[in-house]
Image (cartoon, rainbow, N blue to C red; front, side, top):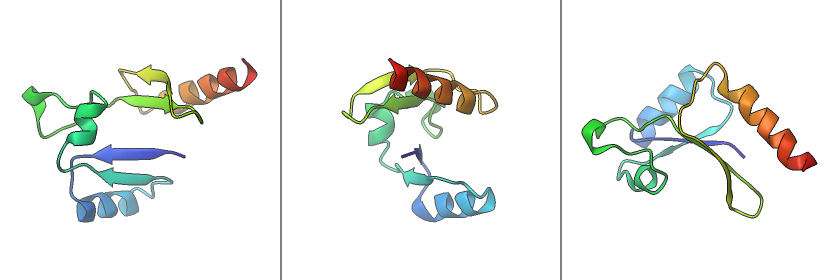
Length: 88
């Protein structure tokens, strides 16, 4: 399952997801608790979460952390890591 999160309210996330035809759900983290828990919150940039991704396995453990995410290259990188995890 793929989830995205932002600090925007639900209605803004819904509009954004519809506009760009997102194939996954966006979570509204207006309290910024999720951002803080996953190290995507920077008090100096309090209105914007950092682009950071985590690959979480079926055992609910973090398998990979991606501290710098390039939207262009990130899907291929995650798919390669998923393949490596499945074969290893």
